[in-house]
Length: 127
Image (cartoon, rainbow, N blue to C red; front, side, top):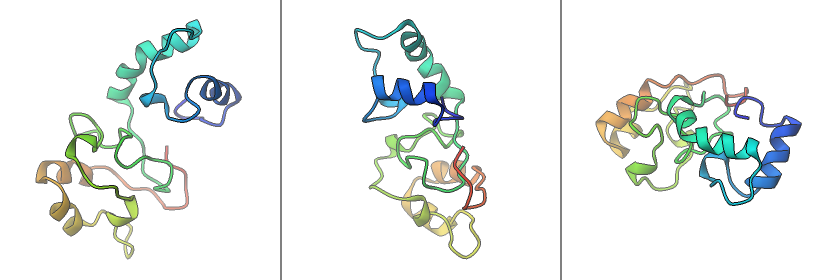
């Protein structure tokens, strides 16, 4: 589901169970299939080990997706940041993290964790 979100079976589950959201923001509900119930039962475990690779910077929810593996929650939700885009934190000249912006925006520990996340070429898909 995470690696190949365009697969037919993933699109089917998305249409049935989380058409207006994402996998990690959904709940089990009362009428799920045994497959969906099993996925929901393991979501929290998946969240711990799942980290997005930042490539295109378009397929990842900056605040809610777990893309920072070195933060306790792996996401920036707990930092209370205003809405932001990856392009604001990445230097347009060299494609690397913009250290000045990071250090001025968030706590040092979180900024250092983000600096450890590799950034791929901007024309490939987040993975």
